[in-house]
Amino acid sequence: MISLVGTWMQQIAMSWLVYHLTGSGFMLGLITFFSQIPSFLISPFAGVFTDRWNKHKALIITQIFSMIQAFIIAVLTLTGTVQVWHIILLSLMLGFINAFDMPIRQAFVIEMIEDRKDLGNAIALNSSMVNGARLFGPAIAGLLVAAVGEGMCFLINAISFIAVIIALLFMRIKKAYIKTESKNIFLELKEGFKYSFGFAPIRDVLILIAVVSLIGMPYTVLMPIFANDILKGGSDVLGFLMAATGVGALAGGIILANKRSATGFGKIMALSTAIFGVTLVIFSFSKILWFSVVILIFVGFGMIMLISSVNTFLQTITNDEMRGRVMSYFTMAFIGMSPFGSLISGGVADAIGAPYTVMIGGVIVIICAVVFSIRLPVLRKLARPVFIKKGIIVEIGKGIQPTIDLDNPPKS
Image 1 (cartoon, one colour):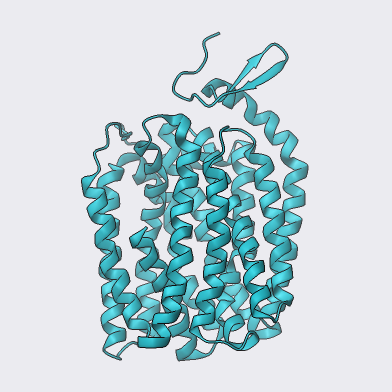
Image 2: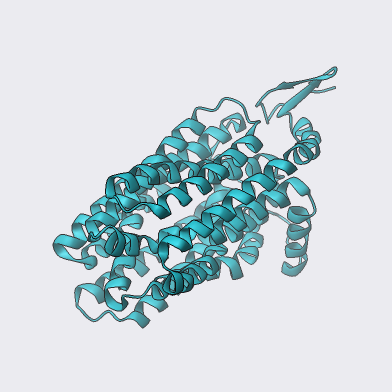
């Protein structure tokens, strides 16, 4: 959590620095594009390697490289030599690191959990941690940028990586899945694609998160415009707006962390997508700070409920030998589509304004929620045999008795 507070501080400071240097919504989108495009291009290959590597050791390496990147941007900013091309290059470097870090991190979660019945709760608690950091990081960054500038935020982020590296070094993982037989990388890539997109429940969930990430998630890229031009504030207002989404996201994470059953995530995905879309539309019309803050709480709530429920569903239904590759496609859909959305939203915002850009995105997200709800009965029917085989649900006569004991499936 300490490290993630630093990460959120860097993201807020970076967006404010870019907007301060360029004054362009398009440049905000372009920087985000370069920081996330590697996730789209590299994640599928990273997923193959994730299934081969020791995820614990690989995660330590990605964190060390992330720390180095943060130190470089901190030095450039504090010495007053930072230029836009520096930010583009370093954003590309971080994107390359994250393209490996994200699927490794997602696949590593299940190795930290000794009892698989705790998987859904663990993923939700992880989301709570991430969004607890989202709550504090932006607010601290907004105040620090106003007081001492962006460079200090980058420096604090670099130092914060020490916390997570120490935590990883102290971990003792009892059971780790490492692929013993490695085939040709392109053959394994093909197997992962066929597994992920040949099964409708996994395919439709990945498509849902991809479209929402492309159209809905880029609202965060335009936050400096809302803070500065529409709400007439500074970096402190930007911090409060981003912190508000963190409050909602934290609440959503806590709710899912207390969910007892490993079933019912389809309804949660549909409902949370609808909440996300509706609140984005409402936020786009707001010109009052306190109302914008309140609405962004619900935006964050819908967003994290969707992301966490998709994550839990994929982790639960996926076989161990395919986990790295499936989670790489999750990374590709969630993170990898965002750069295209950021680039599009930045350009559209320059043409028609940020409010209309966010409103259009919200309407499309609502349409996605409706389509997914219509598909849900079919997807539930297809997923049921897999859940029965894994012991997540047990068929008793004509009824279905839910359970969450994944390690001891019933014998019949």
